[in-house]
Image 1 (cartoon, rainbow, N blue to C red):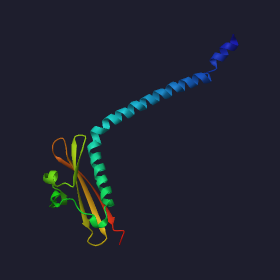
Image 2: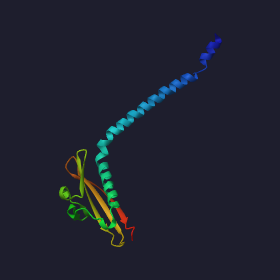
Image 3: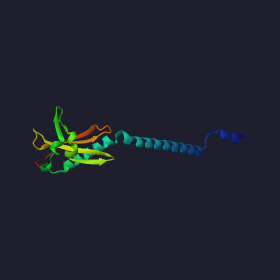
Image 4: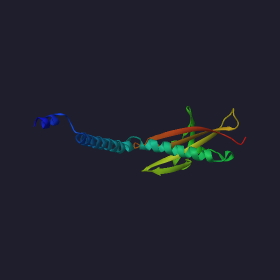
Length: 154
């Protein structure tokens, strides 16, 4: 009898520890899944439109980089306006004069691009791509990407 009592007081068996770790692991996994679901559900409301605009601007940059050097041109010049801060999109004329437009999840994105040769380096052009959209309050928003491209042929 005393031997059985000492055996019970000796601690946990390996099987009991394994079962406890399995239950704990399943609980942690469940909490991680709940957390990921909550983050995924929240993300589209906080950043999907600016993120989409950046992706669309990058897509336009990638496309413009593939155009042969001699054919690389700006989108329609009436899509731009010049002000004290330099060249920017002419929002009031984007419907008509944008380089192209893309509708995604109920929002229309207008892309325009400007290609300018470098005055000091003859074989270098600066490409600026704007992706513009109207926010829910009808005010214009934009994102811009700038890159430079050299003429590798010269």
